[in-house]
Image (tube, rainbow, N blue to C red; front, top):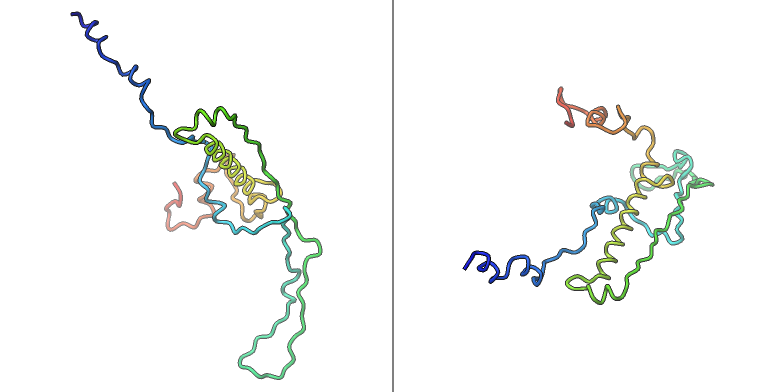
Length: 179
């Protein structure tokens, strides 16, 4: 027998692979980043989509009296706390989308991973990405828009470099803080 006849007697890797079950991961979205920022911020329920920051006007005028001991007969100072008449208000944005899944896809291709659950998970992750983007970059209420000039780092060029971060950082000796 020739070697060509011997090779055709056995099933090859490519043919066997067609019948094998492949181990699959759940779908992965490359744009997903770690969710550290929302966990660091304090959250309050905003019922009407409007968040108002009420601040005190002239806090130094709030008169109090601190004394040692008890039982003094001196009159207490009269005071009141005045609020801003036009407080800053933040109107929050809504993020919405429509997820469309054909029933034939969910019926035929939901093994080993549920197609509906995975599509929903990826859509929710995309919404969370947008939420975090808005928290940082929104011109109305984003953290970058709220920073006062003293809290910003003046950059030497267009993109920040380690040298830009060295300027406001205290150094010990001649060692650079970032390299």
